[in-house]
Length: 335
Image 1 (tube, rainbow, N blue to C red):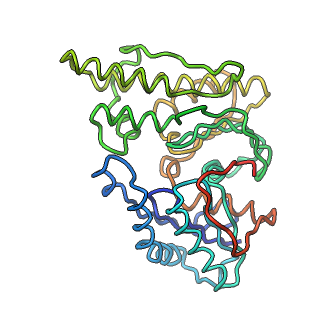
Image 2: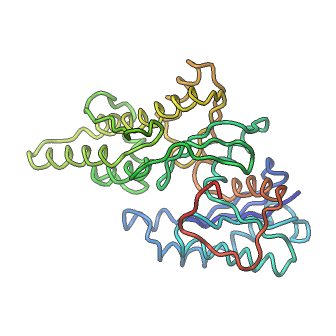
């Protein structure tokens, strides 16, 4: 089964052709990073306009890269939620047009589901059930993946997401967008213990996260140092801050896995590319004799291959949409 997949949830216009949910025949991404660097982050209106300009060429390139025609396709999969509403609308409406014009099934795919599904591409033997930590600029979730289309959120951030606080702290340190990625690079060789940060917890919710206090503590340290004319050692500060975030993510996920009896752990989302997070999970899973699955770095960020991977399993469950499908800025993964 061949699916054309489309992803436009943020600032990457992406298309891919995926076969049977595990084999990527082509994957094309048009990134807007260089333009958004000028503004220190993604500008939604600009992102939407660039998607409009890029989507035809990106889809054409994906089809050519897969050496197939539209008549060879079995369906059109598209990210419909969550994300930037204007950006999502471009992909959804383009996919609806293709679906109608070609007479092919339209498959709506939840963005977080597709991030988890990136692991199916990298690990052909991976099957549910397993426990997944999904971390990105907008999401921090611990999710029970009971089946390919059955999910249960057992932990989530109560305020900021992990990637979001990394981006904001990076900006305060003068590190350019994309902040989380560049903060990780800048912190290489730094000391994890050079700066002290709090370990926030959510009363009565042992698997939930709260990162706003960590962010505030970091920004206060930066501002106080600036007022005193003191230099912040970027590598040490970045290493210490990332270590504090990673501690929260790792400890909660480890506790959830122990409590619920999971021995397969899956990382997903843009922040799963973070070197300290990956290293820490390797150590934790080795200590507990758990199997760890992480996407390749190229599949951690937004891409259409992961949409095609999840789209395949949505197709098998007859999870189709008609032309009334709309984009949605926020949506629960369980729905």
